[in-house]
Image (tube, rainbow, N blue to C red):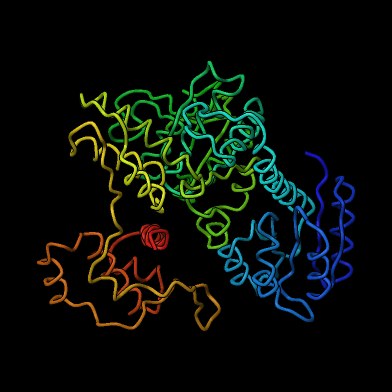
Length: 479
């Protein structure tokens, strides 16, 4: 990567000079601003790859400055630099679109790694514009689409295919993270070796270690034979860890040790074995927020996030929606024995207008449903509308809040009628209300009663806090 252009917004002259010296030595071009006014002037005069933004400035709130300059910072990686006391605001900045945040004092390694990753993200955005006039591919290792943003993704995957560095893929659910992981594998010298995928959210905690590292016969009840585990099975190839943020903290420690040593130890065996794998992981969450809220180890995150790759949602891919829909229609029509001449023009307009919260996976299901349920040579496609129910009146307020003791809290439920057994029976009898809607009302009502405390809510409902966070994230994405 060539040197990046960086703006440091920091009122402490000693800290600003320290950051500048380290970044200049690393080959970057650095400019300084000590106040919000100076930062606004600098941003108005030039484009920066990365902005290091202190939240406590003498004449401005860094968060307000970020919001006011949002249009100018669309293609800039904003890295918030914060003290422990403003950690809650740093998390809020992440929700507004900041790339990452650093907690003072900042180590040299952490500063350089985060800035480098942020600059690479910005350069990828520039490549999106550059490929508009270049030759385009309609597909790539399982991906379908010729949009500029996907051309940049294809090029990024080709560039990192031969590397041994870990890749951290982020993106909404259904955006193709496993397809990207396999494309990375197929684009490099490990293509002829195994590609092994593990979904960390689909395997119970007590079995995940065995699935990942293997076990010996008799190691625990049910261990009837030796098992090599996914890491050993992928030896020489690629190990893909999907939904990595679902991994429990205890196992995160063992994964970190494996990444540091390249050695695995099967459950029930004291002997360590060397394994040569390339690690690719993925999540549909914001990993920086998971780190800030204590659900994901910071040292593991930086070990995995060597090469970040962010997949775009389907709604940002333009006419790719129609290209993918036609490919799915052709495939499913063949499977179902139907002859389809075209998707109707009205259906194509509907496909382009839909927001696709479930991304490619939702589109795939929509086309399959239309093939199965329809008849005739023209395919009529109707995207599923968003769920509307009586639960809407109890929707949560989207803005995050904080408790009096400064602890970050989940959003509190908006004022509304209380949820009681009678209401539950009425909703259960209403055939238009889904189980998900009933569950959402129950959880949001309990959150409201407990002042938005997710841990207490999870305890009283008999589920883990991660389950509550996962559902809240799903509801937020659905709107």
